[in-house]
Length: 200
Image 1 (cartoon, rainbow, N blue to C red):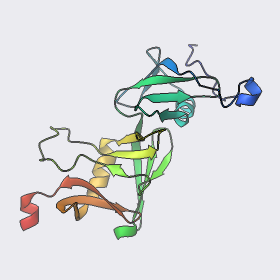
Image 2 (image 1 turned 120 degrees about the vertical axis):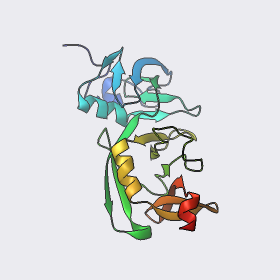
Image 3 (image 1 turned 45 degrees about the vertical axis):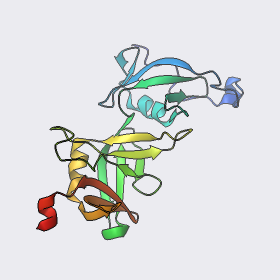
């Protein structure tokens, strides 16, 4: 049985562990974690297989003022390496229609996020169709704010992206025609509206 991490699966509160909550994690250091682009967490090069532990670590993840990813636990705080973003949006459900439609995502750490003004969908949309290559430019979803201006995001998986694209409708963003989706009275652009569509 290999060691999956330096922290217990069920964390002990700071005051029980004998740590000052205000000082816990006051001196961040580099921790031997890597979150791959496919969402797999590695500790010292070994995948963490227990989803409960990944979900626990995911709930403790934030970003500092410089955009570094930090893992903060009651026992220790440190920076970790992330290849793209730490989470994946793996499931989409929608309720209602039009401007008040609600797009409800579930991440790979089972965190529900509803796209809204506080949790916007970010897409590289105002570019030519071939600018992102064959794989396209997948959208991202803001899961939670960080300590500064850098948020913690989830990348939409291809299947979720396709589901989202099926809900897209014409609109404008900053005066530019585009295809996008509504959620909680907010319009999120996904792709530039091609000339053929505008003249059709």
